[in-house]
Image 1: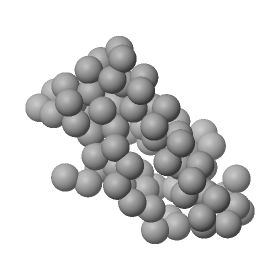
Image 2: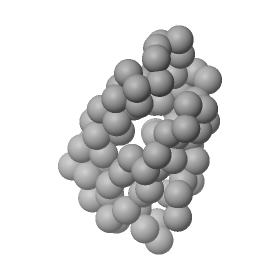
Image 3: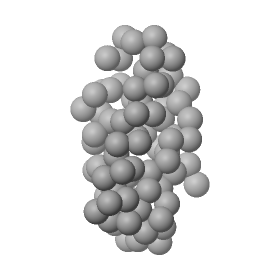
Image 4: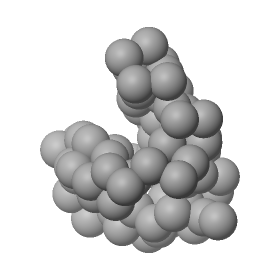
Length: 81
């Protein structure tokens, strides 16, 4: 999927982040919000119960980045604060 045109890839990433956010919200009370994508780096913002949680780095790197990398191996995921 890394060869998809940028607009299609951005659309797919937005959908994936929405699905991840729904899961995180339902089971953990947190949120994952899509911020931006520049073709190489996906910026997300964690909120809700994630704010101040000591497991935020694990959620960001394990759940969010790990899932994104399954579908988009070349995309870097970073937290926008």
